[in-house]
Length: 304
Image 1: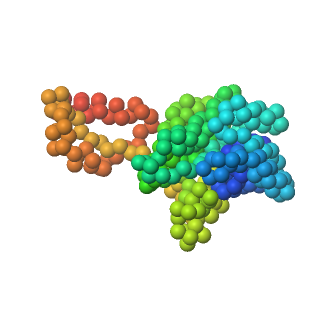
Image 2: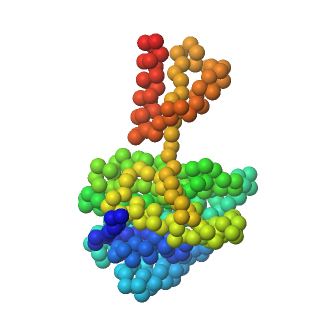
Image 3: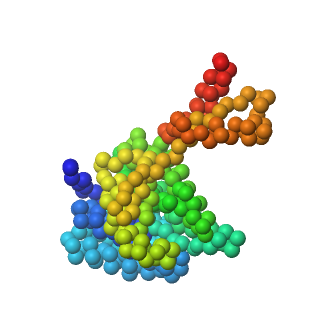
């Protein structure tokens, strides 16, 4: 196997004070990447805050011979995020990699969830990722190089009880990735998602103890390191946990086309099995693929 190398790369890893983010930052640093360790230092629900956790990870990286700097800002604070990026560029000359890992949990069933808890989770996961990405975007465009990793979740992809806010934010990151790919790939910026399953403080009380022992954060990091590398794809969702690695895809069935006179709920009900038939399902390169399919089906029916 060829070695995944990083030559003079600089990375920002958010939420890197513990858990997955720390492991990502540590492993990148071991491979010679200069790392900005970002962590607000708050509790799992986002309350509190201290730069100490980021500084401790920097100390660990430096003790292993790596280079790092701490950034204790919240990803929801755009001016502070911009300063973090500017400080990294001032210190090392450029930023090549962004791993959007920062997150919080405020789990409740939807009927008990206040909208402030919904909004806060969206602010950290979605807007926080957008803030950090926006702060590096023009710089990466100018350099014609960038690797951006969004942290999605099986909750966003498939759903989970009591996590409507978290699931909404995590699936939104997939949508962000899809469109950033369209805008960035031609400029050398590859954007991907990691969907991790790991034992961290985010999952310590929602998974069985025997599962937590197997789901070490270190088992996810190899996929993230790959997505940060020169050879990374773009617009890919990698899933990882307990040594398993896979890809998640958004597919669409071939479906049907109905003439105007038959476009009613009754026709949908009569044809639902064909609409749901998975034969010939496709993954589209962009949003135009869906419309193109419907036009093609229309032409087939009209000619037939």
